Image 1 (cartoon, rainbow, N blue to C red):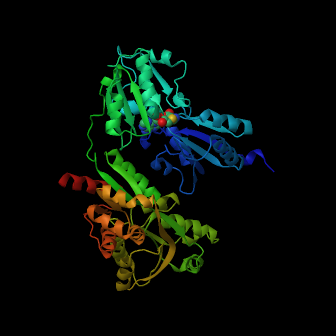
Image 2 (cartoon, rainbow, N blue to C red):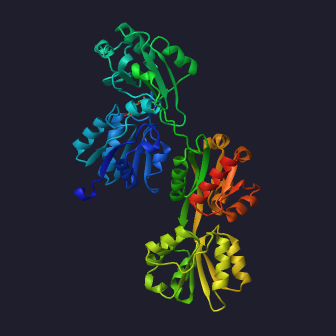
Image 3 (spheres, rainbow, N blue to C red):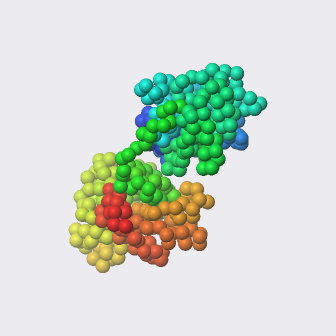
Length: 506
Ligand code: SAH
């Protein structure tokens, strides 16, 4: 039976014009906490990454001409998801209500009694011209701006009856979805009396790295668009302010540098933010998913005999999180760890421990398994017994060092790391276009190389490969590729600094 408790909510979130940084803080907060994202072709991949890893992602793409899902079907889908108790973010390019058919979705939700909220977005109508240096109004030049769809113009090939009135407005005219109708739009404006010298621009993929635009006048804009081969999505801007050029003049150290990153969602999200803040175009090509083995015989035995161990050793934040998840599931609680000493490979791992109410007794100076192993070999003695719950691809250096020091330990597989590709069919092309490729763990190297084809492997020759530390670089070496850059500190700032230094030196 349907009760109010299991009805979900649908958030219509404006995704902004393309640049993922142009989503609002509120939109981002809704994305962070949803369990389903319904998106279309104007939504950036990077925004999808902001949804929880487990969230379901449903593509309902609509591209001009080929409607892959009808609006009615999308409405029905949103109602179904809401009725099923899901917390849905319906991501819509720009602002949901600016030619976004957001209103139709709201009406459908209202009719079905599904709670909803509209989170406004930065509309392309304003932001795309702005990014190309064109303000939609400017004192003494343009006292209004008017946004019109160019799409409905030509369903029967004619201009709407109020078009001449629109054309006579003296402010800036902005056409969305108008590229296919550029000819009737331009001739309509000229016929309505706009001078052929009126400045005009067409901007493709505004605010994105692929942005291209041409400027001209009503008299020649059609030729210029054809010459440059401007494609969709595009915005047409007509008016005096087109002659202004307020494009950003700030230059950042990683402008024009393209970086492909690999790693877990939590890690890559931070690395991408750090790199893009410096001007880089960065994208995640291979993610790492974690598959836990909380109730494997090894982990079950470990949980039942915690009292025998004197040290609990963590080599990743994931290990901490999963270990505690499994602890409770195994019917034990924090008291069973009371006497144990705790070691963490680095700051992030120690921080994760803290969230469970534990302070690490030992964190090596350099956040590397090698240093952790050396430190433990000094701190522990023959009376000690270490429990090391970690990933199956963990570094053997830890075992070798402890063996040499004759320290007892149990190295138990807590989880596996699996590679998840983003747009694998584009990988070769992406690698070829990249200046850098980053690896943040040995298991990340393994997952990446396991999935490579011959062509993709070759494409790697042209990229500079960046590793977070020596252990990762060794794993790369074992795959027959040398690291070009190795970070000095095992962290996101360390990796960013290493890339900055390399760019400056090349
Ligand atoms: N709701 C959206 C507009 C949806 S209609 C908004 O507020 O921005 C889709 C049209 O928006 C496209 O046909 C194109 O004209 C325009 N558009 C959206 N993003 C764009 C971009 N990055 N570059 C150029 N035009 C864009």
